[in-house]
Image (cartoon, rainbow, N blue to C red; front, side, top):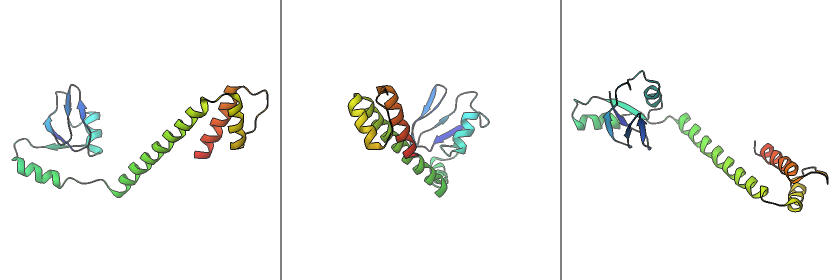
Length: 137
């Protein structure tokens, strides 16, 4: 089975890798019904080509390859936004985790987190972490 990589990343099939835009014959065992190949085709990351066709006809077929739909693009953007938001939250929590007990108490007061004088640093961090995660969801 000959395929071309339509994605923007390198794709691997066993011990064979296709860089973006490259075409090649898949190793033995990688047929159209193989789960990985079927997934890549469904995601439109690869496209099967006929190796006997002239290169200019293959190029024309690649140009007519369907682009992502509006819904697919929106899902991708939503995923990127969620990942960025989660990374920002994790960075903030990492900075808060470095604080000593007194600055943690000040941060808890700033965020409106209830705590007692007996709360340890770990307990206070857990309460602050829960509050921040709840706010961002």
